Image (cartoon, rainbow, N blue to C red; front, side):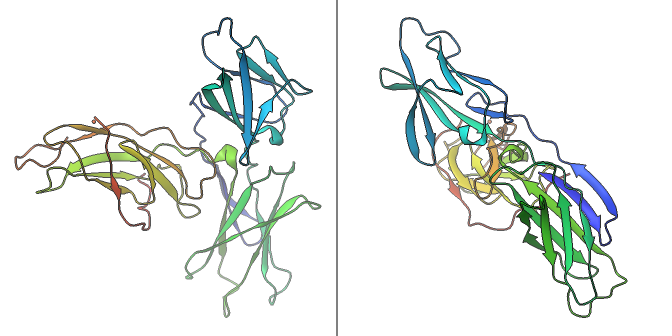
Length: 315
């Protein structure tokens, strides 16, 4: 997520690019447009077999054959070159109809860092905040404006991209009676699939619930690089991969007297972008009536609490 702050009048106060976690998972490949990429069905070569590839996009599955921008090579690999956004999708390889590997290819450039300027044509007009782009943003790019007038509470709204002018524009309503001498502070967040991979959750802990010998409480916090003022995260706990929106989870069928290993990962709340890497391991043992039972074996089921506002990130 690219972030910039600005004051009314166009003076840039600060500019920060949040770190983007690398896509380390072998099942996911993130690449900019134009270059070439080789998809490998298996890390070790497949001998004397015929490998077929299929590509799934928007719910439609089609066989991958050789063509202008793709070529089957060596039976084990698929070469793609001069990549475009339309080449994004899930590529799966098969031997005799049996799937061997599935890789998610995302062809997308990270969003440009916004350089925001704000102005007001007259005292009875709205404030316009805008920033130009050097290149057309990829489909799915979203821009959000976070606005704060002096003592007013912060609000947020989406911004609109104008293709002819090649810029994002956000229209800000000025509250009635606002003092023109007080500054307007705005922050912008621009995101797409390339910039939507969060860092892993922090401070994962597992603790026993008193008088509940088959339950554990798992707690975690937002990664410091993700600002929940713009978008929340949803979470998965490795104990059971069911997305949750809270930053805690009660495990309802833990093994009595057994130490459990728990990990958590996160994704942008609407499912855009990729899942983060799994967090560091946390260890806990269900309540036994003795002290010192809290302290990572996973498997079973879990129950998430009702959705609620996220806890602020721990710095």
